[in-house]
Image (cartoon, rainbow, N blue to C red; front, side):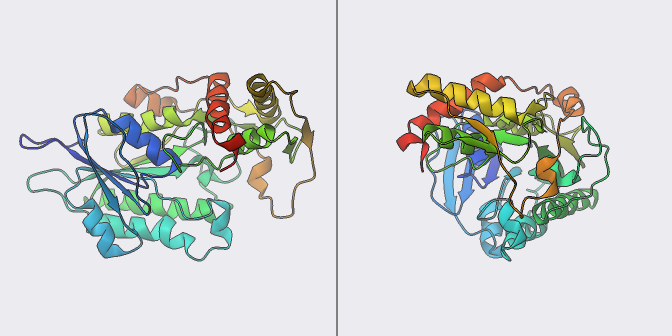
Length: 331
């Protein structure tokens, strides 16, 4: 991050009230920075040494975006359209959030006098590659996105990297795996598959799969993902101008993950473990839901020293504990 003799660096988090955004805010809260939390709904800054301010804004408004990022040394871009990734197929407003804000951001950001261009760390998705051509993915594969969401995330990433090549910003793309875990702030719900299964198990419902359970996902706890963003902020030089895969490298079989969820919820509630069942997939299920993903993040690890520290079992335990405290897992 760009520092100056007169002020701590200003780090602005776009999407600060979201699941990943609130975890990044928590990871930054105890650093000697000025921290600006930007979201559509008010969010309370966590305790820490960072001087924090909260900005409530609709960032699809270009003027509001320009005001929200004014003076930033670094911006962490973690916006997500309403309804998550599946809504991008049918929601005409998703493109404006997922792509349009990035187009505006690289135009409105301005460096401070005598400073380097602002650093922008963007939360992309490993699924941008499309159907994985091999395992593990290492980032050298050609991108052939299959869903509207992945096409939009790829367009935003390319916009950022082109603006970096043009010298307007210093952009870093972090392609995220399947993220899971407990919420770091009130209202910051995890809408991913692990939390969905935990909620079902807490309600005593069977955990259903659209396959035989051998499909794998690279699961990384949200606290480790947040540390990947702080690692990028701490070590930008080797990362700027490229995109980097983040992953644990395990390739966890979802059948085993679901059975672990069932056992962990049973240990928490005292009830018998719920069943784990295969069911027919719905017609709208995308092809990528049936493809396995394992990620080789060794280039990012070598450049930053980052590595995931939360085991799958510990991450599931923390997720169950967090959701069990929230009305039986219902929001």
